[in-house]
Length: 247
Ligand SMILES: Nc1nc2c(ncn2[C@@H]2O[C@H](COP(=O)(O)OP(=O)(O)OP(=O)(O)O)[C@@H](O)[C@H]2O)c(=O)[nH]1
Ligand SMILES: [Mg+2]
Image: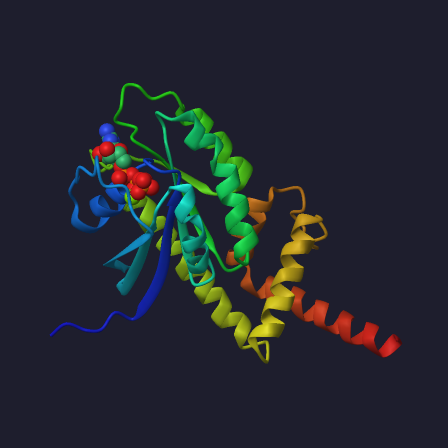
């Protein structure tokens, strides 16, 4: 008897045209390399795959957006729905690498930072004609604070790992959300506090002892110290109530 998948995550694949979005998706879903030479994606297409992570069945619904400029507007309608985004560039095409900053900006202006998980893929790393080095990929990943994978749809390198990492990140976010929700009356107040928390992280006001650590470490630490985080949010709430009383 097959049991129903317990969770469904929505994932969107973005990146310049010809970066290999469709090939990466087909490698992940069907474990084969499909030659797509003359078949640029029109609009958006969709595939699904179920992963088993920590004994949990997770169904990934994956939308692959066309890279071509004329189709970009279509994809933005899917941003808000997405739990995770795979951003891809082609390591033989420096322009596709440079354009990643624009994609990241576009994603962040169309989604909530605290809700969305992302991975960055430098694809076609099987090709000898590569011009974007692994080092450049790592630098960009540090700058954007997105986990980076060197991938090849041709050989399969890195692809399963990237999707699994993204799925695990989404799972973590869902777990955190569940915990927070027990403290907040509704979605709106949850978002209000979590946004405040991110703002404070950005402004380096976060009152943990390990302030000297990078934001990435802090977030990792937060996940390990969920109770600290909840206490911190409670403090924010108390402070806010007090300020309201003072007015
Ligand atoms: N050698 C090699 N070629 C690849 C790889 N991934 C994709 N390609 C080739 O790159 C070209 C574009 O791949 P697609 O997957 O169609 O690219 P796309 O990002 O979906 O393109 P658009 O739909 O136009 O946005 C095709 O000719 C693929 O065969 C890879 O990992 N290695
Ligand atoms: Mg395509």
